[in-house]
Image 1: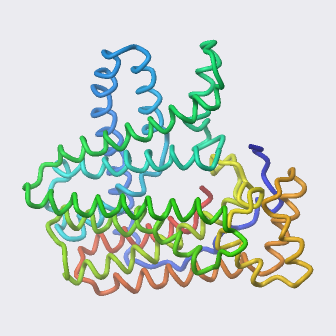
Image 2 (image 1 turned 45 degrees about the vertical axis):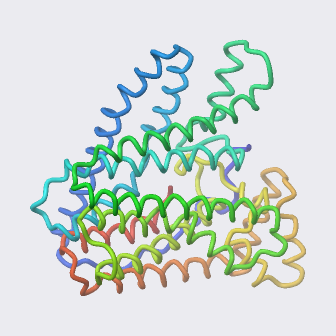
Length: 385
């Protein structure tokens, strides 16, 4: 895949959201707590993965090398968004007195689940880079070539990457089992976790299906993909996962607030990704720009552009999905903006962030968590990567 930034890469992706959350000093404290949580998750992952890789190396050095590739995919610089939302979902219900150590394995397990999804998504999308590095299947293909092995290196890389994803999914289960909460509570956590995984697979299948039915796909169906592929396992379910860790499930009003907040922010997060997929700077996003237009992927952005376009613009937009080089994709990106679709996506993001903030306004949630979730609603949808 090309790594060219398309025209408009300097376009401001999302307008800055209005400041919410009250005292800026306390908001800064919540942001520091988030940074400390991310470091703790990284430490937990590294400590868990070291003996796991060693154990696989004992089977065969080649398996150890394979496991190292999986470990590196997990530990590559990421934003740790899912553990962060889960942490604040938990902290919002237990307050600031409870130590985080007992639930850290569960929070970190979400990052292993995320790596599973990323690695296999990259295979499905034939993506060359992720987080500024070669994707797992590309790295494994390069290893195949360097070792002088027989057969198609690309096919080997894809097959091995599927196994990397599978291994991460097993690792997630193993790490989750280390969570130090009562057994009956861990069972509720596991139910939430399983539902998250089912919804992620459902959303991913719809995403794959959409690329083969792009001519009949609708904005509503694209939003459904966003809801299940992204919103569910990025924000909504992690918040409910955190609530389950705190022992709160069912019809509690906080569950309703988290559900509403999570769906709104999760959809806004995906809408922001749609914009970054076309107008983002690859040096910042770590992924090529313009691939969604090059492949004709039926994102909300592209479908809105077709809906808003004049007949002449719609005929030009029909070139999306026919490949093309940098100039062709850049022209399509400019055309999408001219239809007004970019402004509409921005409006939809603003609307969802406002709905999310309304969901937690007045909810019986620890104030520090409210401030942190408010900041996350903004930073997750006003970003460059």
